[in-house]
Amino acid sequence: MRILLLGADGFLGRHASAALRELPGATVLTGGRRPTHDLAVDLATAGPGDLADRLGQLSVDVVVNFAGAVSGSAVTLSEVNARGPAVLCEALREGAPQARLVHIGSAGEYGVCDPGSSLAETAQARPVGVYGATKLAGSLAVAGSALDAVVLRVFNPVGPGSPAGSLPGRLAGELRRAEPGGVVEVGDLSAYRDFVDARDIARAVALTVQADRPLPRVVNLASGQAQQVRAIADGLVAAAGFDGRIDESGAGSERSAAVSWQQADISLAAQELGWKPEITLGDTLRDLWLSTEPAAG
Image (cartoon, rainbow, N blue to C red; front, side):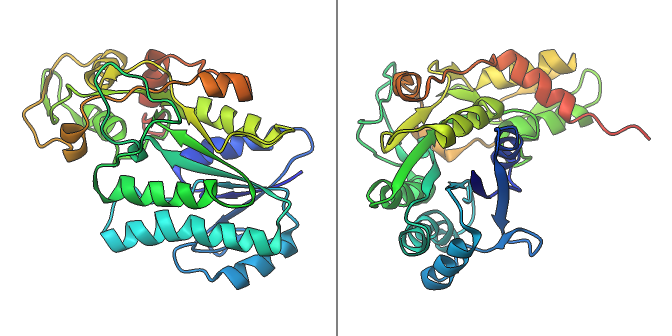
C-alpha cells in the first residue's frame, strides 16, 4: 500500500508518520513545501491539473492530508484550509480516482454548542471566526466529493511535541523557564474542551487507512469527555513539580471566550473504526513535559 502523507512536518503529521510506517506492507511517501519531500507541493497555490499528473505518477493508494493553518490572515487561512482540500479533491479525481482520501478536520468547524451536550457528526456546524469557517469549507469539499473520502474531525490534540503556539506547548515552555516559586501568566482557563492525545489520533488514522469498506463522510476523534482547560495547567504543573503559581489574569483566547464548551460523541469512531482513546490526559501531559527536556550535552 502506497500512502502519501501531506503535512508530515507538523505536530500531528509526525505522529501519524510513525504510526503509518508500522503498517505491514506500507510505503509512506511525504508531501509538503520542502523540496526534499517525495511530493514538493503547496496546496495553497498548486494547480489541480499539474497536481493530478504528479499524483498519478506516484501511484498512491491513500492520501492523508494534515496540511492546514491554525493562524494567519483571512487570505492565508482560506488558501490553506479551504482552497487546499478543494484542489486536492479535484486533482485526485483526475489523477488517482481510486485512492482513498483521509482529511483532517477540526472541532472548530462545530463552533458554539449547548453546555453539557455531546457533538455528534450530524450536529449543525456553526463555526466562530475565520479559522473554523475555512476548515469547514475544506471539509465540505472533501465530504461532498465523489472520492472514497473521510473527514476525521479532531477535537483538541495534545501530546509530545505540542507546538509552542498551542496552550499546552507554550505553558510547558514557560514552566521550563520559570523560577522556583515563580508566577506563570496565562489567560482564563475556565472553558471546557475535549482533549485527545496525538498518538491516539495517529492510531485512528492508521485504522482509517486500513479500513476495507467505505466509511462515513465525517468521524469525530476526541476523548468523549470535556475537561476544563485548567486541567492542562494542573497536569503540567504536576509533571514539572512546579511550586509556583499559575496566574489566569493574562490575555486569553478569543475563541475560548466565544465557545465555552465542546465535547464530542465518539461512538461512530468506535463503531466504524473500532477506535477509542487509550492515553489518559495525565499521561499525555507527563509525556509532553518530558519531551520538552533539553537534550543532554
